[in-house]
Length: 79
Picture 1: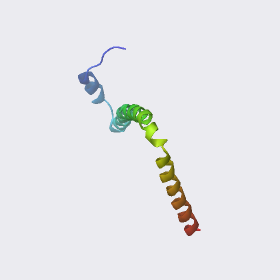
Picture 2: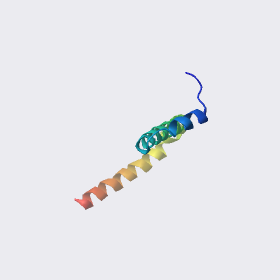
Picture 3: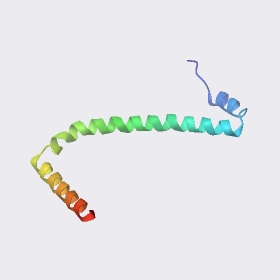
Picture 4: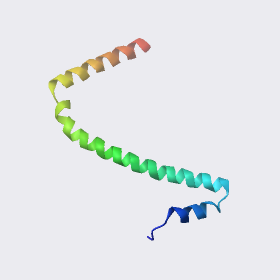
């Protein structure tokens, strides 16, 4: 793919009607958001492997079990 400059993009954008500019803006927003999400996903996946050893401790299991119990009580109260 040939390299494109911002000036070339601006020149094309100036030729578009407002409704097309909205589409372009949505697409560019999608591309930048997708890249940001991809970076965040990489960080989360890397953190998961290092945190897994802490998550699988008996103390963690006990804490989550207590939270599950509280959630069950809340559900019963709502009913």
